[in-house]
Image (cartoon, rainbow, N blue to C red; front, side):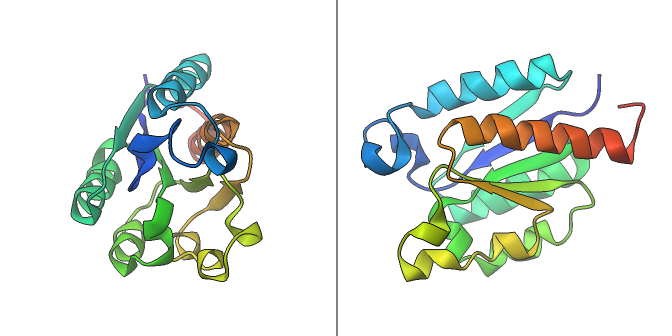
Length: 151
């Protein structure tokens, strides 16, 4: 079995389902985790799914994915717009990085239209709600297989 795909989630995503459902949908983070695990299993990958409200913990997990992960799906939430630390950690990765957002930041407030994470990501999936995570996992798995056809 290949290394797992890491799926990391930033601040306030623990409140999915109750926080601004008109923007982020009504599914909970646990619902999203189950979607990710099912999609990963269908593609032959385990999913290492985590959430933190703390920037440093996310940096630690990105560094862990550098060694232990096949790919990284990251919903940085608000940290995408502010965190040079996440950007610097992502730049150390040699694995695919897919940035994922439930909403479409380009269609929202001006300050959300810039992402430090995008500067280091292989690709971005945004605006498809919880289904975007499944798309991100498909993209990540495809990139892993392209880089290493035996995976």
